[in-house]
Amino acid sequence: MGINDPVVTAQTPTDDFRIEQRWLLYTDEEHAIWRDLYRRQIRILNDRVVPEFHHGLQALNLNEGGIPDLERINERLLDLTGWQVISVPHLIPDDIFFEHLANRRFPAGRFIRNRRQMDYLQEPDIFHDVFGHVPLLTQPVFADYMEAYGIGGLRALRHDCLTNLARLYWYTVEFGLMNTKEGLKTYGAGIVSSRTESVFCLEDSSPNRLHFDLERVMQTDYCIDDFQQVYFVIDSFQELFDATQVDFKPIYEHMSESDKVYGLTDILESDKVYTKGTQSYAKSGGRLAHAS
Ligand code: HBI
Ligand code: FE
Image 1 (tube, rainbow, N blue to C red):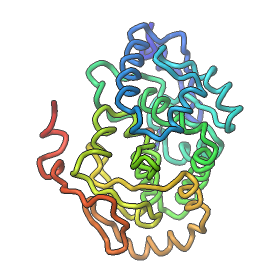
Image 2: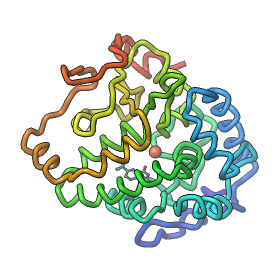
Image 3: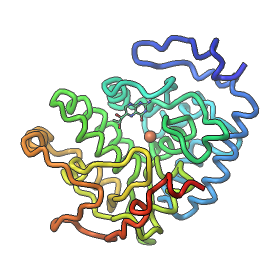
Image 4: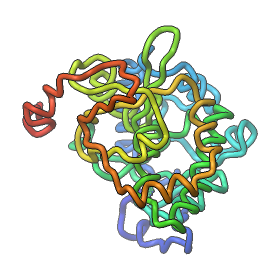
């Protein structure tokens, strides 16, 4: 009986969508899929990802052994930054998602992708969530940022500014880059869990790479089902955390008045530009045109 068997998935989530991981129910094949994804990504990421990511993998004993038992992960993670990982059946409503983050609980999909989805899947599975997002939760400043993001999300819901805040999450937590002494590296979970985008985001001449600016990011549209056409770069996690410590109220008011949305390829006078991209990938049809 695998984790996705109807009798197991029938378990009704509580009102905050938490479900038991039931780690013993994962099949050998599901563990083998984790192992193959892990071995592939760790080879590609190497020094393309910030060192804090590798430190997090080691601190939590996340490895190629198979799908991690969240109880084991949480014993270490709670000690390090007070965060814990909980299992959820699928994407959960924004307000519940923010509520969990605001209480240092990271919601991770319980299922793992199948072999036809090794390069791409819509819903976040346990590999995207636990391999992609969890290692950086061991990093104190990033852990503080994720909690501040959850608190900000609950506030954004009250100001009907969720779209702006979702863009902030997208261009940092999911697809963020960082400027380091050895050049640009990635830290975004959507990138580190992707075989192809972990190379594209740093080495392809196609996308724009601009320095992070809170309001600029919150007013910039994004692609949900293809490589990003713009990536935003921070100098440190501290810079990201400090950006959340401003009073968002006037920012929300100003944004809802102006209702300005920047396009994926826009470059503004005020932008600090690392790369002015060719946009050749998007112009040549993107993922569908490059399907290998
Ligand atoms: N639910 N399980 C889960 N995982 C997510 O990453 C997630 C979610 N619900 C909402 C959501 N993300 C987005 O709205 C965030 O970008 C805010
Ligand atoms: Fe994610």
